[in-house]
Length: 253
Image (tube, rainbow, N blue to C red; front, side, top):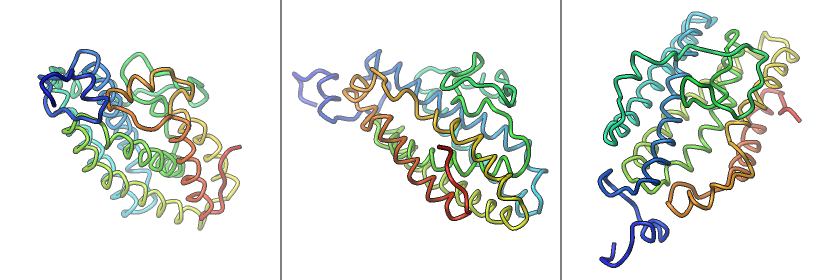
């Protein structure tokens, strides 16, 4: 960065930061929010799948669920460590958050988050069984791939590098969900599986946020966003639709 260049201009020009020490206050706040949403979503997601481990119809299914729980927790810890470098109280995440807390199945909170943490809204809904968990994991897995691809380009280099490590790990969870759905399709009624898709599709779609958000340009100028929510959501819709089609399922219109 040139001596006469402000941090803001440097970021707007595509510069990257490598330490909390030179992060401007607004940048720091937005970066912390990004990290908190990811960590809280991973821990809440892991808690939900932990309750599904013994619901797996076979040993390999239970192993897959346990793998997802372990790796999501590890992914959260990786980013939580970076939050700690910014002064976050990382200890409270282990002991003071109700990660298993869920709303009622028929709650409709849209994109709103709960009062207890920063998890994406979709992780406030309960899983009701193995098939439900598999469908949710498949749809959210494709959403996570799109979202992590965007986040892996953030201007805070340590976080971008962490997300690039996390991306292939999360991708394996989607592969496990795809295999799980293929197995379920052999003995589950197609209508029942489609009902689960109909339930989760709009809730996963809401994880892409407000399509008319006025914050995008400000985040883009800080190097924290590159692609608008509308484009990210469209990409997910296309990829998730293709994934469902291989199982004879379709998105909710």
